[in-house]
Image (cartoon, rainbow, N blue to C red; front, side, top):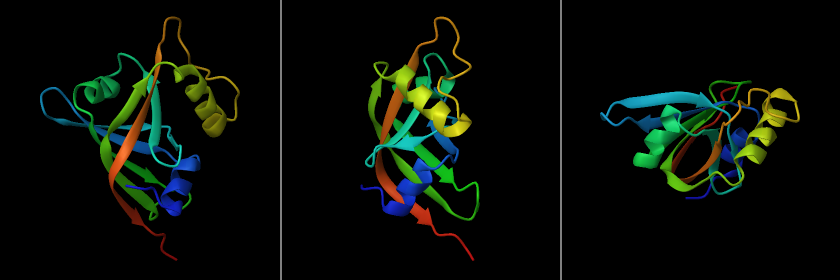
Length: 133
């Protein structure tokens, strides 16, 4: 399912996303994350070993909501599956996101031994809510 221009705009702006995953016991988990898009996928990044990336490794189904910080009545909900999960560009992606969200060149909270993982989510259903005037 393609990401229309207003949805891409929400993902490209420094808006936070909330990623929903399913824990091993079947209960839901929702976490706020930095996000971006390549035009076709929702792109998120985390450290290996954290809960939500582990949930997605086991069950690739997810729901992502991104809301405009300027107008919370504008948002998109994207349901889909993990299309790609890689450590290859993990550090580069988190540095890109740090520039986008913090205005710094290097992610400031990197820890020794931390392995970053980039997850690309393929949309299966997209709902967009236009802003209210």
